Length: 382
Image 1 (tube, rainbow, N blue to C red):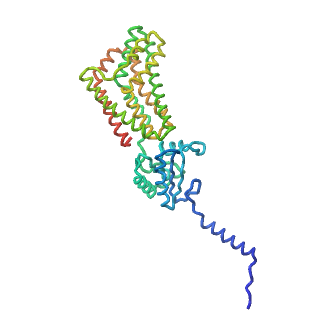
Image 2 (image 1 turned 90 degrees about the vertical axis):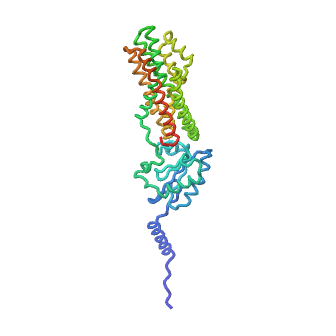
Image 3 (image 1 turned 30 degrees about the vertical axis):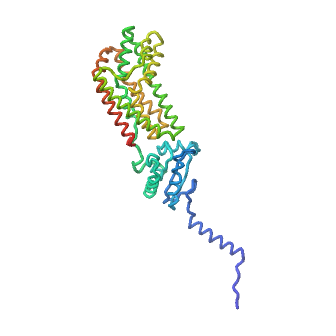
């Protein structure tokens, strides 16, 4: 019998290597769902954002893990928000790219977002949202640009003109008009000096502007450092806005019946204002504006609280300074215009007459606006 020739060992090894190389070339290895792996075109990208020590995150994570394990085409990544992501923190990326400022949060294909207010601790609801988001995931945008595909989780944009208009609404109120008329009357009757009145107006407006900026940026800074308290602050602000709205209605009734406002002015504030002519005009008027911002917060600050709440809800923490500047500019603009008009001939008595005749209507309109804002914010409409 004729024996077949036996292939040399090196020939077998070469043949085996060729087969393996062909398999690698024509059947690529499927990417896993771990962070940093290659994502195939038909994969769904799921990103889970959490914070160490966050109880809500600890409750949500097993649900997210369970749902993700049920699918084969998931690229799944987890991010602790205070860890590094390139040259920035994960939190900053989460806010800038997705407009999310709270955890836990899930983002699907860089577009669909699921945050705690969407399910409010209901684990079954969270699971339903995850399944719906994954099975109906929109295509990943080209160049990884974030373009929200549906409006379910995207809040209406809070634009700078809207913020400026809200500031103007807060600026046109009887409290500010009364103080400005009082300051003008006091200054003109004692000195009759137009330049002095303009100094007082400028200092007073600067005091209001700086105080509102300090308080607003302080609050936004706390939320950026401790995002888990955002929901609590949102609820407190909604309650505060609603109560202030009701107070404006009560004050309209109080004005109608008793012909005086229920918003009381501090005696120390009046003493400070009355002594303005005997001290450094600009400095004292600045302090008067800052003090006015605090003691008249129910009168002027209600709309301000609403703006703060919307900034927090829409994740505009990093841009807070710009938005607050526009709001504060809106608040002081009517005061500046009124002060200039008083300095150039408008009678303080005429301003007082206008304030007295329309203060009930102003209170009612402000009350309606505040209650409407509280309801819209509570139901996540704005």
